Image (cartoon, rainbow, N blue to C red; front, side):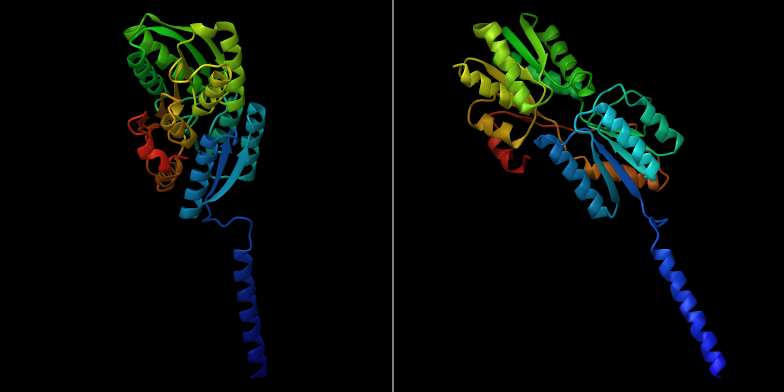
Length: 319
C-alpha cells in the first residue's frame, strides 16, 4: 500500500511539473505578437496614433513590440529587422520615407510576416510586399485645402508652401493634390515659394520667418502640410507684425486640438482632418488575417473638414 502511494505521488508531481513547464515558455503558441514600427513620436498626431494602436492591442489581448525610429530611416530599417528576428507575427509600419525600406520588406516577406502600412506608403507592391495600406487620401486632402483657399481668396493671390518630410508619400501627395486643384480652378494663384518644415512646429516657424524676410508683403496665403507647421508659421507671422487670417491666410491639414483652437481664436483659417486613430481598423485587419480571410489592399479613412463654422463643435474630441 505504501509503495502504491509513493508511485501515485510521483505521478502527480510529474504531471504538475509538466503543466508548469508548458506555461513558462517565452511565447505561448496561441500568443500573437505584433511589431509596431513608429517613424517618430514627437508631435500630437504621432502620439495619438501610437496611443490608438497600443490601446486597441491591449483591449484585444495582443502583445506589442514597439520601436521609435526617431525620424531616422536607417534606424527604422534596423528596428524592423530586429522585430523579424524576434519572431513577431505581424508588423505595423508607419514609414519614415517612401524609399529605403525595401530590404526590411524583403526580410519580412521571406519570414512570412505580414506588413501593414499605416498613414504612409513605402515602395512596394500591395498584396506581395505588404498586406494593406490604411490611411487617408492625401491627394484629396491637398485638393480640399486648395478648394477652401481658392474660395477664401476669390481665386487670386500668392501662396507659400511649408511641405512635409522630403520623400515622404504624404508630403508628395498633399503637394500634388493642392497644385492640381489650383491649376484647374485658379490658374492665377501662384505658389511663389515652397520649402520643407519637416512636419515640425519649430522648423515651420523658422522656415516661415525666412519666407517672410524674402517675400514679405507679397505673401497672401500659407499652405502647410500639417498643423504643427501651421502653428509655427502663425507664430512667425505675428512676430513679423502681420495679422494671421487677415494679412496672411493659413490653411493646413491634420485637425489637432491646437489647430481647432487656433481657428476659434481667428488665426488659422481651416484644416483638413487626417485621423490618427488607426487602432481599431488595424486590429480588425489582423483578426481577419488570423482567421484566414483576405483583406483589401487599401483602406481609406474618411476625413472631415474644420473651419470657423464647426471648429468649436469638435474641439473636445480632438487630440
